[in-house]
Length: 333
Ligand SMILES: [Fe+2]
Image 1 (spheres, protein in one colour):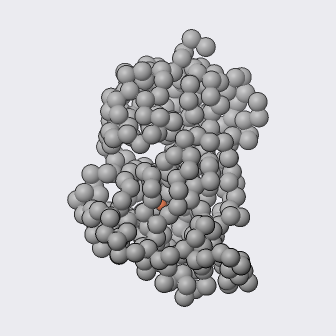
Image 2 (cartoon, rainbow, N blue to C red; image 1 turned 180 degrees about the vertical axis):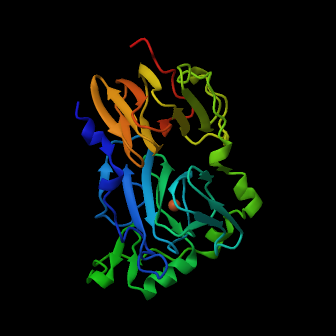
């Protein structure tokens, strides 16, 4: 099996600089957008999708320099961010004034549907967010009305079919295509107000993970597992996550001390691994790869996979699996 085709290294990510309608708006014009697994919600048909296999969710990323903004918008599915690096202010509300929360490395936020959100790198260094968007087809982004005005001023037109025309690159609106209607007051009114206090309720702080040693994966020396998103999963020996509501995917964290090892087991569903800290050795059906900070890898369904700490510090990795209650990992393999 070619594991390399299932691996996206952090330093090989292919950015899109004009993925969205706000790509020319001052303050938002230096953001890099990545579609790592699945098409996501990018509005630029030329954006590179690293892995096209359907997973039941999409994995993406945003990399932004200090002061760079992602404009207010909402989605038709859950949107989850894990902070890989940087300091980020997430703001709620159509004009970003309902609430604000600042997140740092290892923090997780799960944004529900029906809420306008935007985010800004408020730190001193370039930052990267790892993003999970629900479903194979997450639909289109709904932008706050003022985003359309700014885009028009700077030469970008969003079309009714969801694609983007960049007039600064000499593109023209194709004959017979119409611009996306500006988001209406009625659509805005259908959104909820979320205060700063309520934002804290949809966040897991890196220091507040509940690390366990009694789960299906953690019964080995030096291995701990934390349930982050999704309901209790008896098959995996995990209680409800810190954010326990169903997302149609689950998110777990695994921490491996030096020399720790999770032996070979099989999984019945898609499983995407993302390394936040350290190095993770992964063996799949006898083939080996090593994941480093920021790398993303999707394990083939049914394959025998084992994980070990391949670095010189504790390794922290995140696992996203399809569905709210993944099956029991099968260690009989
Ligand atoms: Fe988004």
